[in-house]
Image 1: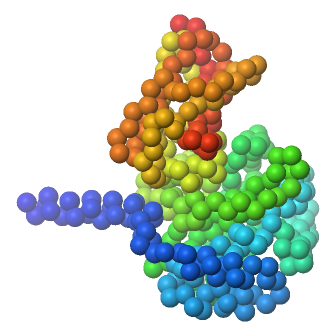
Image 2: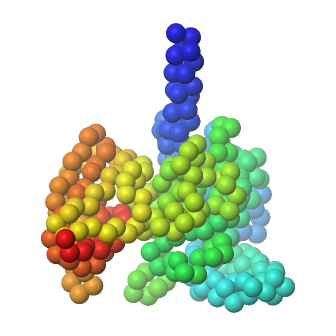
Image 3: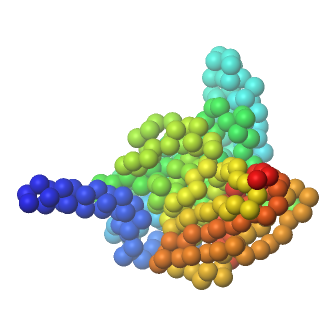
Length: 340
């Protein structure tokens, strides 16, 4: 009996650790922190200690203080895609020459901080740096995490050196993950100019979901108790979009992007959603390369907030399968359908 009690107790603690990431701050209302971030919208970066103080002094908890800092950075710093492309080109060019690679990193750091200070434009490194510095000035422990990030436009064949940075923050003696770069906004597809569009899903994100398109260089920043992905598994993951962080807790299956099936067979995807939604909200956009059509899945079953989506393919071919919840694009998979 004692053995069973101890086993049950430790299982309970283990499950609590896994779920704590998403549930720790459900009782906190961040409206005051968000309003303070708006009050100081447009402030310069010339006096970071004063800015950090202004954002945090009237807030009681670390979580609220960090929220005000994070929200301010996301809503005041623009993502400079031209700067990102320039850095990516140079790093790829010099990756096999350690001397030139180091020299470029030093030069780019100077350019990066000049542009951040003068124009409040930067790339992921600048976002993560600013969140860390403002947090530390408020006595909040925060780190920059270096690693690999995957978006729909990432060239996986060139993903051989770290290309992304994000933050880990310690609140109430626990570490949490945030991505201020991806939370800040998106490029306008017509003008390719950055547009602020805050995505709250990247704030204190669930590690299980974060791991699908973030691969830290230092393994301690997975913040996972089990199922640590290999780099090969990371590269084989489905394409995950920003809206996934607004809608999902995690992907249960499938965690690989490509599937080979036979004509007449079905493929299934299982998600755990943050909120219960109607089955009718789930839809697919299937693209064969020549044609694309929107359709309801062959079947959708749900138990509480867990959804299983099945799609049957009756024609051979190669298909991109885009999964939507309402108007939100969540994930993309590829399916090759062979003859029976």
